[in-house]
Length: 302
Image 1: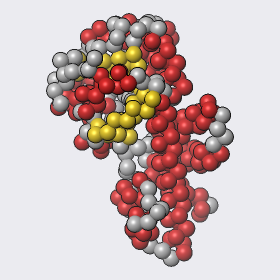
Image 2: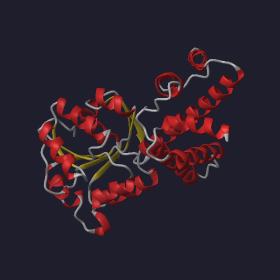
Image 3: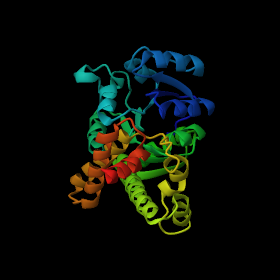
Image 4: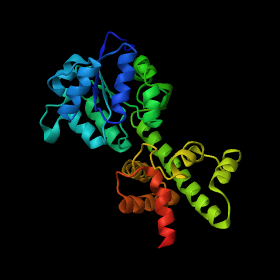
């Protein structure tokens, strides 16, 4: 069964990523029902976007055979799905068998597997489909989507995903999408950390930061940070790439959780996480993640 534009799609979470994603869905002709923890934000956005606002999460579940969550973490997703503290007033109070919950948050893969099992006992499907690309790519609909779940469920969601991203990767069974996202962000964090350290070393040796970035991007040292973050955000010290330090540390800890679940020592990932966590403690979880380079510079000056 393939989801189509006649089906109403529920969307829970109108944060920095959720709001542009909803706009993409509406722009593609999908009917969307909205929910958010902030009633004022929900009222303003629903009015502007001409989207419906079910009175409860259970009502959303009744009205929507597909519900997307874009929330800060898996614990909040679980509360939305099953109700807080076992109140049974979440989505499942209204979802029919055969409905699909699509968790596009960056949740714990281990928790996602447990959530999928609980939903399966009720005949409800789960697809974990986190995204990569940040706010900019959420706005233009070019996100990379990593989808874990049954192939038939992922195929059902492709018309919805088409409004949000240009590439959809079926990563395997439930939980693998979130594992893939965490491991991807670990690589991103490690690359930024290494490039930032290299830039600071090079500057002290007399190399210009712009020259180093140009050489890296023409050579084997290039990565996402050198290509898209150093010149606009790090070298001019604007620190405004649009992804927080706290979220990066959360994703790194999730990657370690995946490693622990597999028995992999992951020594470098552990060290990387420790450095990022120290930076978060220093500059604050709300700081832009590019400020890891400012942290490294300041630590060197201590």
